[in-house]
Image (cartoon, rainbow, N blue to C red; front, side, top):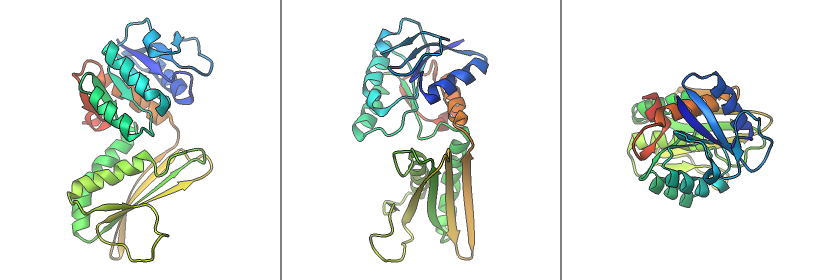
Length: 252
């Protein structure tokens, strides 16, 4: 049985992880960490990871970026593997995550959905072939009105997957075409963000060629897919050696 500490236990995603963990064999949540909200009562909830008394095999984090530094320190001190699902990390926090991964296993992904990570893999596979044939690459992402960051981390990860596969240093990202009037170049990847309503998350990768367009799409109907992916990641990460992992390692 894999024992999980749920960081951000009282938030929306924490509750969703709790729900699906109860239905998943071979995994159980033994404790939570949160400073706000009302605990469900299914397990003890502490204010800080350092205060947790229960033995555990892995931590799943769905909290806020401000809590990441302390969480990384606590997991390193306790030698706890960490599935880090919180987005919006600063460059300094990302570097600290990499350093911490030298001491414990850390799994970080821009999106915990298994489907999105298959999409990332597909983009990396076909981008070189289509770009060489003259196709332009554009990414459009859509999210609910409350989402603070734009473009989404997933859109940037999709752009990175294409850029890394192209292996061209001159490839650049364009986020706003209103600043100057010019034709796009072949070596740019356009990234557009839409915010409105209650859209959970939609990502389209367009490969636009002469007289034809190929679109790879992923649409999330609920945030449950992220909770399910996090649980799969936790099952994968428990017992792994120190290092930085991603959902690409989980899907194989």
